[in-house]
Image (cartoon, rainbow over all chains, first blue to last red; front, side, top):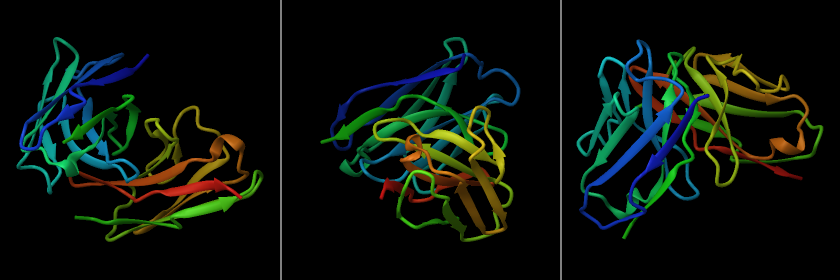
Length: 118
Length: 107
C-alpha cells in the first residue's frame, strides 16, 4: 500500500526558508524508475508543479522557481525534502508530494500541508 | 513554458448528463496528457494518463481523447460522486503544467 505524508511548519515569515519533508511507504526512491515531485496549490487556485527527483538523483525544477528551490532525498528514511528560500506571502499554499509516473502523471499524493507566509 | 487552458471554467450539470471538458495546450504535447479530479480539502485523484488510459479503479464512465494540442475529458453519465473540480496536466521536457481547472457543479 502506497502512502505519502507531508510535514513542515504551518507558518513561516517572509524571507525565511521553508523546509518540507515527505515521508512515504510502499515503494522506494532507490528503485530504478521511481520519481517523486512536489506540487503546490494556493487557496482557491490551480495546481503548480515545483520540482522532481528521480531514483538516480536527477533533479528538475520549475523554470519560474528554480533559483529558490532545492529537492533532495534520504532513501534510508524513505523521505524526500523540499527547501524553498526567500518565502513570500504569494507562496501561501497547500504543498503536496506525489509519486510521479513514467507517463508524466502523478498517481499517488499526500494529503497536503498548508503553509502560510505572514 | 507551455500553457494549458481548460474550458469551461465552471459547468452546471445534472445527474445522468454527459459532460465534456476541453483542455488546450499552447504547443503539441501528445501523448503526455493526464486528468485529475479534486474535491474540496482533498488531494487530486489520478484519473487518466497518456490522453486516454484509465487509471486502475477509475470508473469506465470517465474517458479521455484528443491529440496534438486539444484534449477532452468525458463523463458519460454524471454521478453524484462526480461533482468536483477537474484538472488537465501536461508533461514535456522535464516540465509539468496544470490547467486552471473546471468546476462541475450541480444544476
